Amino acid sequence: MLTSKCLRGVVTGYPLAINATIINITEVDYNPEFITRIIPKLDWEVLWRAADSIGHSDGLPQTIEPKFEENNEFLKKVHRVLLEVDIEEGNLVCPESGRRFPISKGIPNMLLTEAEVQ
Amino acid sequence: MARRYLLWFAQEHLDFRHAEMHSIFSMLNIPLKFIENPSINLPYWIVELPSEICAKQIASRSVLLKNCLELWSRAKSEAKLHENLKSSVKNKSGKWIVTNSNNEISESHICPSELLDAVSDPNKTFKVDVETFCKHFTMKQKVEKIENFSYLPLEGAVNLNKPDVTLSYIEFYGVDPNNVPQHPCDLFFGKWIADGQRDLIKFHTLKKREFIGNTSMDAQLSIIMANQAQVAPGDVVLDPFVGSGSLLVSAAHFGGYIWGTDIDFMMLHARTRPTRVGQKVRNKEESIRGNMKQYGIRSQYLDVLVSDFSRPLWRQDLKFDALITDPPYGVREPTEKIGIEKDNYSLSEQHLDNHIPSKVEYGLPHIYSDLLNFAAQHLSIGRRLVCWYPLVRDEYLEEQLPSHPCMQLVGNSEQVLSKMTSRRLLTYQKISDDIPNMPHDPHGAAHNFRDKYFAVGEISRREKKERRAEEIAKTAFYLKAKREECKKE
Ligand SMILES: C[S@@+](CC[C@H](N)C(=O)[O-])C[C@H]1O[C@@H](n2cnc3c(N)ncnc32)[C@H](O)[C@@H]1O
Image (cartoon, rainbow over all chains, first blue to last red; front, side, top):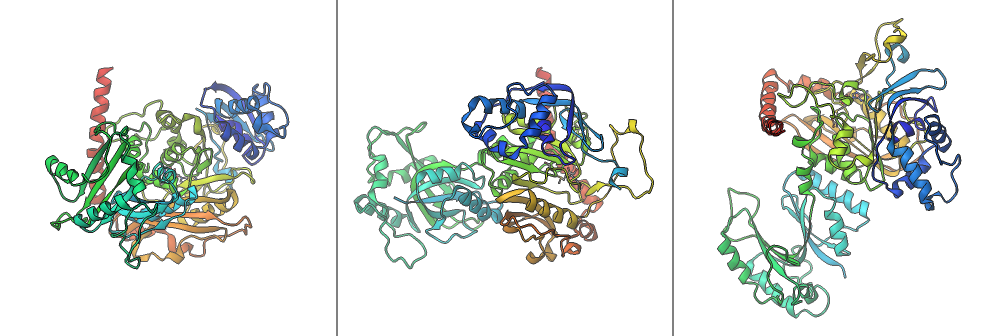
């Protein structure tokens, strides 16, 4: 889902790298308005690199074109990578410390240990 | 032409009625104009709306609204109601005729005949519903009441099952079943426009939801919260204390794309003890994602993460369209964050993946100031944070509620929980992007609900037992149904 995908673009210690061991593709309803609204919230470059690192950057441009909201093909591809590609199992990896955050059943575990909090 | 509408409400959660309606009107950008001053003891409002579309939009959101009529006549007696309608047949002015306008009750106002024209088309079928509040009538008596309207220009055929137009006649005998007057005290006649969202309560009922926890919010209150938060299609909504995700179900129903976080790994993975009494193991599919699938809104599930709200998680400049949450009160579930009181604590690498860290107390004042600071940082301007706030009733002072210079309190509704305690649904709107860093709530100490809650001795062992018995009764029915389902398979 957008989930782990977008996540990278979203977490601090930023951007997190992704190691995916199981990826699920689930088709879900396409809503171009939502995709158009979410794109400006994303860090596109980070999203692209993340999609690329798990082999799902096919056809995604590395930079956003100015009138992307009129390009339905493009919106559909973003829809796919954000909402349909789910990382079921894997890790998010902090770029600075190399700390791994495990993803299981599509749910990343971002908890730190007691020692890390201190 | 602006028309008058009768909005009829469910007579429950009274303190939430204005808050819910104001949120819906302002979200839809519809001006709220009362024809009569509303009273909380009466289940109706008489308002003017710019168009019928507005009335339908309102009804498509409100869960406290039962239905909405286009009002043709209202009176305090049967004779007057008919007198008005008879005059309306002749009122060709195209406007309501308003006499003695200093009277607060609009009982001698005459609607324009155009409204009645809705039923004068011979090709349109119609029916008349009779509703009486607080008094019962037989079918035969109701038919007699309908016959009194024979002077109306009703040209079409009657169709009771699928009429083109439904007219509605309402007799209201007050709200006290022990003191029912002989004659109705308020009478209304008009054209049915739309029903509110009462049916959604059944559709989203926790009894049939796959994944619930012991702090799941009931469907009706969750829907009110989504309305308070003005969730609209395409909005990105976060619940930072997501638990079983009950608040996100209604947010997604109204078109929100949802995100949740919770500190409890076992909860998000549905590995806690089943909430339903008597259920031994949780179903493999149980999850927030599974619930979204159950309601056909899977495409709006973004993700949930295990994380501690007291730690930063999101990119600084990320903005949400709504925050909806029920933070832990520390009564049914602990308020906590990650930490440990020992020094020199360390953990070996191979333990890291499955490690569930120990937690330290995360006090309520702390939680609410973190929540307001978070909202000030991460909400888009003009958007809302909606959250519950527990209180000992005697000690409630509005000026001691959590506050933040960027967040304006726009809704504050009380739900009484017991003689001593209640919780308030607080709605804050972000009014400024100019964010000072607020250390802690100055009234922090006043808010330690958990200590007070236990200090007033609310949960005695006996009460706990009673509550448990109640839960068993509630779930027994569900389980029986489940068992029967299993047998069938
Ligand atoms: C009142 S419950 C919310 C219930 C939720 N509305 C539902 O539908 O189940 C509060 C939740 O906050 C979580 N919580 C407690 N401390 C937390 C923290 N520091 N960070 C994130 N979540 C926390 C608890 O695990 C619990 O699930």
